[in-house]
Image 1 (cartoon, chains in turn green, red):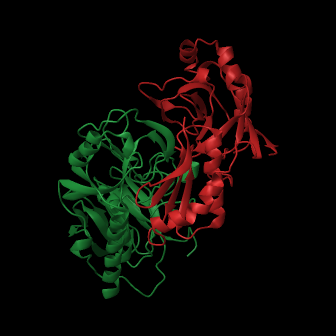
Image 2: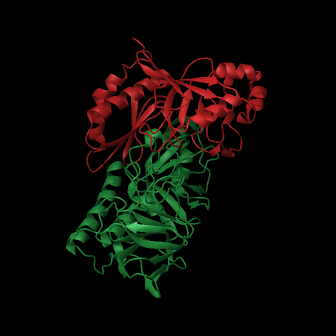
Image 3: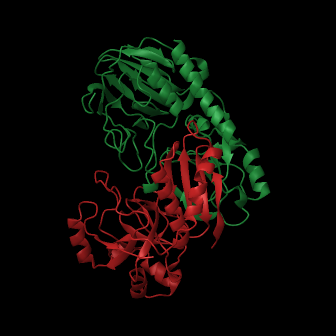
Length: 320
Length: 249
């Protein structure tokens, strides 16, 4: 279906704290300084699309912590995955990981947070916003992509494509194993380096044996962490180089910063490690104030962990 | 300043590998990085998803479902050998002549820089416009060029507390490099001027004014000329003179 031909499907009555259009992101432009942006929890994002029968990369809303109030302008199937923010369709509670059917005029609202940080709202067909450099993701920091390059505001109307397949969605529920966990401290697996030799032995031990707390100024650019200081052998400065998604930088003051989807694409501070892809999705659901423990894994273990969850999601789809 | 005999290869996350040719901001090492990036790009290796060339290292992103780390390192071996033969001199490039006003409100840190370097403003400007610099990498924010090598006398420390607002087009210096901020952002480098030309434009086929490997010569303009260019340079590449520079080996 051509871009711009979608049908007006939702209206934002109140925007919530940060609600943006996201897909899997915008790879291929880091060499120009353009970060990939995209959903902070890719697994929940894909699961939301699969629940309503969408292609995996269809644009969803990423809803952060305090949710919006949304009116449906057309009948549609929808789904919510990720965090539990006490969503309701009119007066009926909607649990995460479920499809729902909305009629014209229905109201979707959110309430107190029970667990997690970010909700993905998919509607059948996916949101119809322009593709910019290959993606519909909002790059808030650079001001492009998504809906007019910015977080959603009161009065915004978003269209959705009409789903063109025979698999009319039905009421389905995502198995518990694919839903996010409720806890206070999260193990986060990392690949060590590339600057591990720039830290003292003691510094590396501190990094792997301490609880780090996510600070309140954390966002889609990065998470700042509070915790024991990691000591460098010498200077924390390196010649500026690529900072891949999940890179854990340790600047001079010795506390780590995890660089995320809207980060600067290069950086001049030592990188002690990099979060594996599977655990980036867990990070996307961690609220400021919660704790992190870093665990080193090797590449084959990281790849196995990533592959297994996607294979499991695929076999669930085939089974139903 | 270190140039490695053999490139160092390491993981950079679970879907990236980093090939470092040295630990210095020099053209000789950056040429190796860029030559390697060009060769990998042309070879279109299966599983390679993105290349990020920087000052002294190349990060290769890959899809672990398509290629594993060990095999990828093996595929790269012949390119690594070839990249080591890159020389700093043999390359043709573009020369971009970029107008900069070093006056008044456009140069809020000029007095700091003069105090720190013990140079008169005229001397700072003369040095900054003296000869073409080289674009080592784009990074940090969309279209932001890292330019150098900066003359040692102009090396100034970063601000203790970065500014919360650095205006679009600000031309700044720090240790070893000069940058231009493509959009208003927080920033900690010392601002000595401002350019009226665009550095990034989403709906322009080039996307960014600069490409790694470009030469760039800054041209000092008055505030009046700055304003005139600003009015005209509504599109990327406008207000900038571009020459092709041939360099024979």
